[in-house]
Image (cartoon, rainbow, N blue to C red; front, top):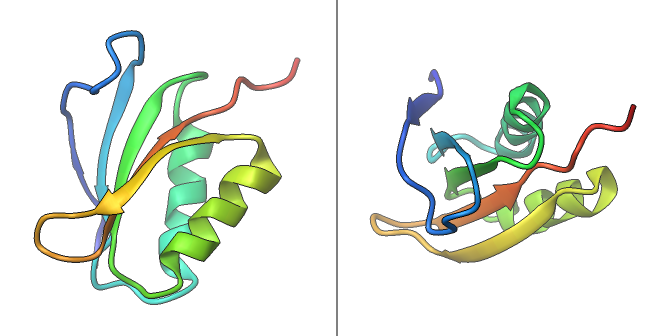
Length: 94
């Protein structure tokens, strides 16, 4: 299953949104791995939205954010099932 990316405006007016990543239907560890890849490819300080329904996604994505220094801005229930995560990418170190 390929990631589907949709552009949309962020709820944070100061954030640049890189897109929405539809990862529902993928099983652990793929949602966290694809989220990590999306964050690596994203511009500094931009926000991505991830939709995932794997039961371990909340733990895995929160852990990813903590260990990589990204900000988990929101985690809530997604329309259609699963969770919606809004993540601000950390600035790359020089």
